[in-house]
Amino acid sequence: VFTEYNFACANNSKWVPFLGFDMTWAKLDSDAFDADSIALGLNVGVKYFIRENISLSFSVGADYAFDDVFPGGDDFQEQINIGTRFYF
Image 1 (cartoon, helix red, strand yellow):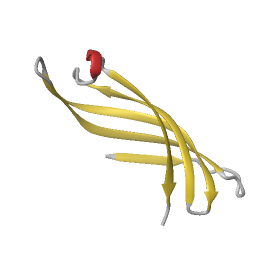
Image 2: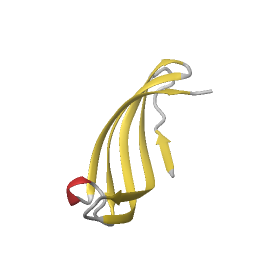
Image 3: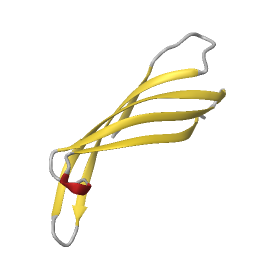
Image 4: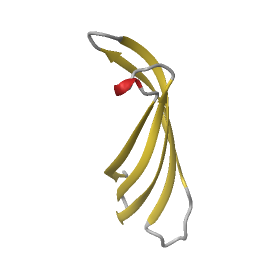
């Protein structure tokens, strides 16, 4: 489950900052350890619109799991996302 809030900027601005929240089911299956957990995440980023319906996006985020399902047995997993978004 993912939701995102886009902040309103000046009318002619091609830059749109956003804040995203997500909830996922994380699962770890290995020879030594099996675990399931709910993970909650937060993402902060910005989109740059190159056309009216296409944007480039950049965000940083972190997920927190209530059990040890991330590599290294850590409860937090950090990430950097770079991508494109298409709007129809």
